[in-house]
Amino acid sequence: MILFGPPGAGKGTQAQYLVKKYNYYQLSTGNLLRSEIQNKTLTGNQISEIIGRGEMVTDDIVDSLISNVIKNNKYKNKIIFDGYPRNIDQAKNLSKILNENNQKIELIIFLNLKREEVIKRIEGRVTCNKCNKTFNKLVDKQEILNHSCGSTHLIKRTDDSAQTIIKRYDTYIDITKPMLDYYSSNSNFKEVDGSMKINQISSKIEDFISS
Ligand SMILES: [Zn+2]
Image (cartoon, rainbow, N blue to C red):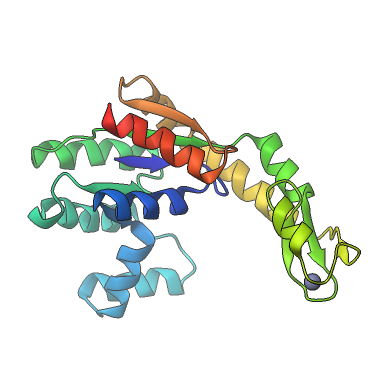
């Protein structure tokens, strides 16, 4: 299964839920890269060098690590791709690797979050100036009501991070647009609204899995 979508849509949360429920294996490229570095493999050393230079790890390296996992029988037919593929080249290469290993993508889930929703969420953020805890007025209604400092300390803080979040979102949409076009014509492509509650999203995904 491929699970993708812009930052803030809750991919990680859903992936972890599915891993627990269906005994899937969550394949995150971040984790793959980190474990190579930790194990000081040849590839790991290469990755360290690239990151040290402030560059992005090449598709070649990522693809070869992904390929190793796909070839491993232990994970056969139970992989959730989380954060991979991240562009159209990787998407095409993934199809190739899967074909070579007699596997296929069963389900492609695009956990979408609209730009205005991202902005709405940022604008909903409030911080308690007594304990420094951050809430979201849109989703944490109950937590705010129960907050021990009371509601008078909750203030809206405007900072640079809001701009960073929106920029990250825009970059993601730019990079994945060709990939989205590539996948969205498939019959096993499903779009899920990431602005729903976490458990609503989960049950939507479960419906797709069982059908
Ligand atoms: Zn507080």
